[in-house]
Length: 441
Ligand code: F6P
Ligand code: MG
Image (cartoon, rainbow, N blue to C red):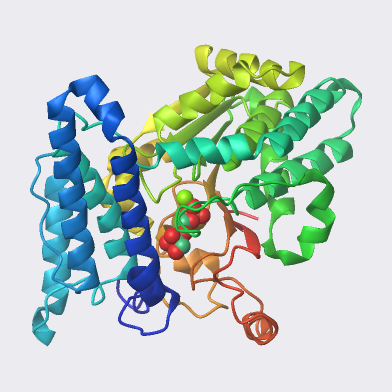
């Protein structure tokens, strides 16, 4: 990208990227190995000796991967033939070409952090698909499901809140609707705190009731463009006669409680007629520990539908109906698990870019999406969001992200410095968030 600053990278000793590659990623690999170990008897019951052999193979491939990483070996091409293998290997060649002049080869610490972190999850997938018959095992499934179960209390409160709200919609004026929209946006934002990659796969579930904490949390929203979202959606609603389909697209992040908050927001948008269709985008392969795959998406809705609580199960029934009626649509696309920044989407995945262009608004959930939106670069804090998107403008878009990586744009002059002085870890703990919009004002 011409004129764009350098990428965050593990070569910056002491940076969060460096610490992630040095400490947190090996921990995630060790956890994945442990998980395979623990499922040994299940593999045996299902597949006999073959299952045991497959488990051994997957573990040895993951151990090899951990060793490559910890000894900063060169990044090697993917070997297993899969839909995206060629694109990954071309990307490696591209990284090699960038380093050619300096006579280096891309290695774990001497490459863009975004690239190697994505590559690590893709290599975990490779280890699994190279180990039939356990080749569709999701090493993170257990912790994702656990995250959902641990957040049951706030989940029940949220579903009950939604259903009670729905029963009063007819009597509400525009201001009351707007207030509710702002509440659910913030809940969806703070739901992003609960991801498992930041905690090395340890539980990071939501235990408290978010609805009552929103006011206290508001000062931690560093950029808050909720008003822009409201006026955009209100305008879209007004033009409904000319454009009968109003689409809000949600690029999902984590499964479990965060996904529940996203589905509640999506339900709100349909039941208030602010949108007529919601399109969701998840990951095709297990990704960054807690990211949502189609299996997680269906599993969560199924759990909600069978929940032994009147309002929760009502949500599940409604959500299944939305899916049946085509008002909720789930999309898979391999682009979301490639290492490319989103500025490259129109070239690498023009079909996906064209799909997103049909939306009236696109919500990008979570930190990794923010890193890919902004190219994971060392932008100054005051650089406008629009500029950091480097030409990625399929439709008006908004990032709902808690800060878990050393990158933030669109701040006021001095704001970043002030935060750093009062809280040196402000960029990486998920304590702060943004609701950051790019589109016509
Ligand atoms: O380093 C923390 C991290 O693993 C980042 O690499 C990544 O951006 C983030 O966690 C994942 O968070 P989220 O689920 O919000 O995208
Ligand atoms: Mg995630």
